[in-house]
Image 1 (cartoon, helix red, strand yellow):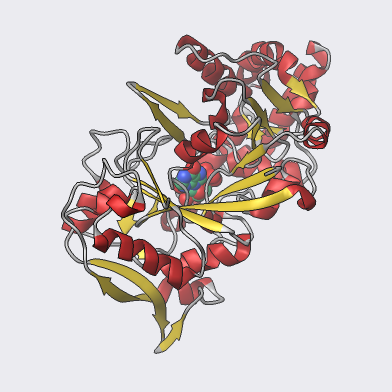
Image 2 (cartoon, helix red, strand yellow):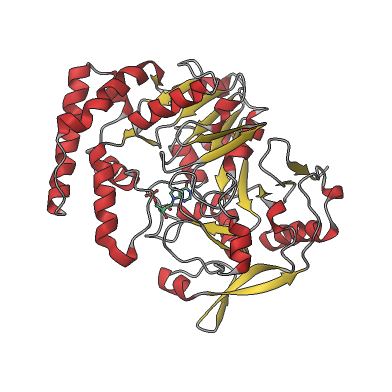
Length: 430
Ligand code: IMP
């Protein structure tokens, strides 16, 4: 297993953090390849709940090296806060255990201001971004005007000048949007301190990975967000600005495809989405409320980063099939199966109907997708609490049939499901 790529197979929030934590127990390196602190990966270990936004979830496993890849966009101030927060919880984070690519891009305070201004401008077509400055930072990257984490290795004055320059450039766009410009010196103050702190962590991570793979080390690539938020493959423009899909792992880390031997998709046993955009299986009412939970538990369906209630619905097989195809998933793992207990009959959206025509894969245009209605197949549910099950044989027959049917409909093996947030609440097909 040289490289396993772990992908969110839906709209993010599939429970990837806990899966990475599990995979990391038999890996040497966990490397994140896309996105920034728009992500929120939660891992529960005994009584502690760790919420990670930038640092790969592998940091919670002793002896595992964590890498933040070049495909990421990094807010250095928030990264320092996250490192210190985890250190305060007893997690060992040193420049030997956390390596940051010198080629990741920096999110400036002006990017955050611009993200907010753009969302306001979009009005009722707002994307519902996390307002972390993600889109504007990637725009500067592809526009070749961004500043990179490697710039933090320069003399502090030189880095400061680059940062002021970057903020001033974004200021021009802000002012054109009718928003007050930021004072570059004031806005950058915390960034200078953060740069000093982060300097020892920054290296060329792609060369590091190349050498590690040559030595036979096992690497898990940790996806953030999900396939349906991918800037190319998601329901554009209601997407993030990075490539959470399998191809993004290669470019976002600088590794070649020949080392990859497993592409694992994580999907929740139902659907959730935060932010705007089409969601053909979205539900309202009692079942949606049961799927969402009340918000009292950290695993309820409220954003880890923004606290927003998530939209909830039945499992969308059309989208999952699509995720299998665009990522070449070798297997799927279903999370939160326990939440389906006691719901009564369960539904799977096996196709969409648009203007009287049925689709097994999403229709080509977003306009059609917005008009799509789900065609459901109904399966018998189960009443039992399954949170204590650890093998497929222990699951109620209806739960086994649900898994089996999803696997058949998507033509992909499913050999692991999760039945609760704790590290050991995994059910294996063994
Ligand atoms: P952005 O990434 O903040 O620009 O947000 C773009 C879209 O992606 C919005 O619909 C967000 O709600 C969604 N999004 C971004 N990150 C996550 C995530 O980690 N989980 C779920 N949705 C996300």
